[in-house]
Length: 500
Image 1 (tube, rainbow, N blue to C red):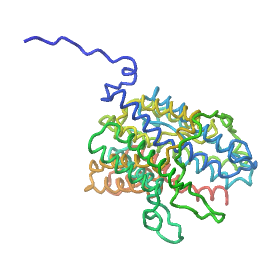
Image 2: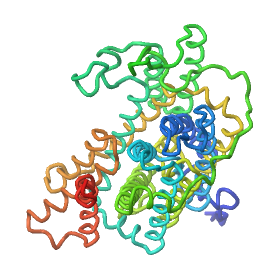
Image 3: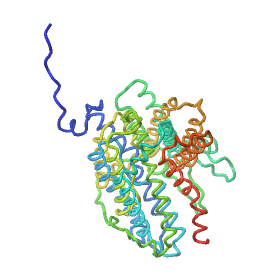
Image 4: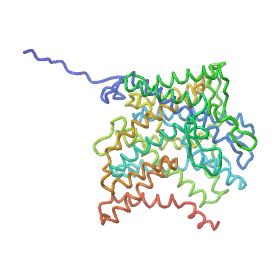
């Protein structure tokens, strides 16, 4: 019998650098995955300016140092895309993991809330961005000293699974809310969320969302390559045709703050652009004051704000990395991803870059799961996403045609894929099941990943102590649990310390 003496050549070029073949992927999957991730999270280019540009700071200016609201939104949009692009590429090249980075939702709202609360004290957006930079530096120090990785490894395996499942439920919830399939009722005193408008589905944008979800489901079942990307493209094309015929327009608010046309498009009105290119204005980059907040709002308030940012960035990223790694089947037997230190270091630098760029802390995005669902397994997908973000600063009119109703179906489908891991939790063991349950449900219920993780940690420790198993608790879990107790009680603690 002849012996086949051929040996497999080691991978080289892109394949070798990103370990595409080693991780069971292909170049086409990585490219598709990067494109899908971009279109799934590109809404941040529209949403971040809406959140940050809605109020004037203590100087009377909008974010970006301008008194013109339209100019402020454009500055934030460009800055958001630039920082997201650069940091996503860095994650791909250094972390070599399929996670893209952009301005963190929740953190940007926290910044706006601080501006509203302390505007009378002269606080500016630049002052608060300085605190974001400080928080990012602290996170980076924790990474370089090994503390962040140690905490990551100390998380019990069942909680890691619960975090991944909870995030799956969370992003599906984001999808149905962004699409208007479920929303807050217009009448006060009623249920906190309802189906569509008045308990009934209404409006063509909802039709686009439903078609997108069903189309992706059918394509996935039939194992069609590029199912999620095809679904986004088809849903976008359908949205453009509907808008051209029906002239629906955007959702708007009346003088009393009430929604005037609730069955219209949520963020982006889909239409073929009149031009394809634009010239980006990078004026917002570098607008931060490192220590300005401490003299205006006081050391205690500024420190507690940094602590809130720190905990949110610290554990949101951990949850996202676990969820993406699980979905991509890249975690080791202990539930840890490859290149953990590099991934966490890049994410920490992203927080610094977001503050220094004047557009809020940047962090790993769970929407990257959409790209993983499309087949992405390496950092090349993140590089593709980053390049598209940078192109968006010049081709904003082209990328802006995708409405959230066409991208949101991807979140729902990926949410399902991540929820399938729920069978890996021992529900018959209450020591495991109760903390896991609270971790899962509190993420969507509170619209906050950190809250779910914190509740899971605290309950895990409490139940172990109640069963006389305190010695089995990892020392770092005690420390982290103490931090979470402070996090949940930060408002009364601030009141006590400041005498307010």
